[in-house]
Image 1 (cartoon, helix red, strand yellow):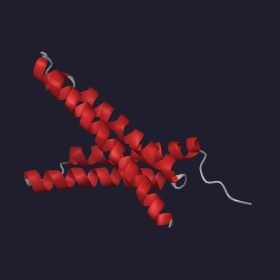
Image 2 (tube, one colour; image 1 turned 180 degrees about the horizontal axis):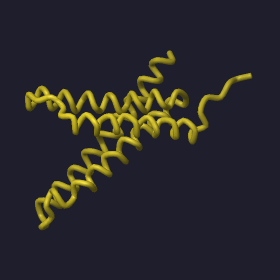
Image 3 (tube, rainbow, N blue to C red; image 1 turned 90 degrees about the horizontal axis):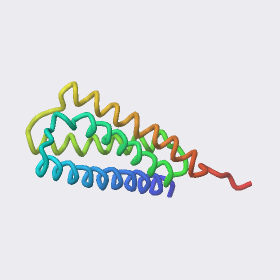
Length: 129
């Protein structure tokens, strides 16, 4: 039963990440299309928002799981990385570059940090004495 609960927590975190990613992508695609902004001028803003999104996803998974936040957040980040890798590999027939690998390691780390904080702010595991 516990593994089901932990799996659901990771799923909630992953859904949160992709919902934020879709929203941010829509916003920036509209901004780039209908304004004079260039992609190079907003690249660091997008990277920063990506890290914040993964942090929030880890936070949600840690809050839902209520224990093992580092594992839940890390699993959320790893699942996100796997999905992105599969899209890139199957869609573009290319592997991650070293630059992308470093970003995704950062994504996994920041999601794990979000999971730790999510567990601690949600009250964490309470034993029944």
